[in-house]
Image (cartoon, rainbow, N blue to C red; front, side, top):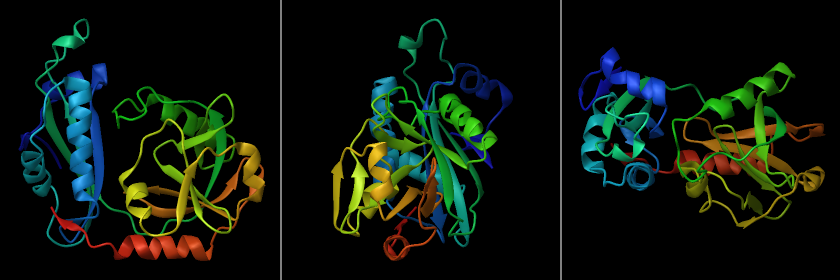
Length: 257
């Protein structure tokens, strides 16, 4: 399904999004008509719309449009993309009439198998915005996969860990969950999990990773997914803390869409 402002979307309306790649989005997993952290997803859309377009987004209207894409039963992944079809490549400052594109696809079964990731030096443009500009992330993911890994883990030039290509990462040091403090997109799933276990947020350097007990990736589509390897560092593909976080996350009652 793909609708723009509640109507079937046409090719001409998508040209601006395809050719300029300027906009923002959020992705939600809808289970039986409910979304974990729905309020956080809507806050993200409102905040990012103000950042990219300088206007306030009607999030209640967004909610109504997203509801159309999700059946009342079963699991669906719904993506809400906000962009201005009239954006002029030469005059982006005039873009100020964002529209709402809603797409959906079946949600995958959870949990997913562990990830093996390769570190790469990269910091996203405007990292606090969940932008539609996915080129660099997908490029680094592709390079990692060509070298036998599943995905890319971003670090800065000082080798400080930030995030994955489309996910946040957390570590367990034997006592607490450690969330990296770095320039990155703060995911809804990560924010929800901060209430599930004793945690600290601090810089995490690659040279610390041989000492961690476990690592995991999070986003709305994958929930909590074990990370079993980073570069040449082997980590457990399952761990009691990861199981506890996964259980805590799945037990969060979703908000009605």
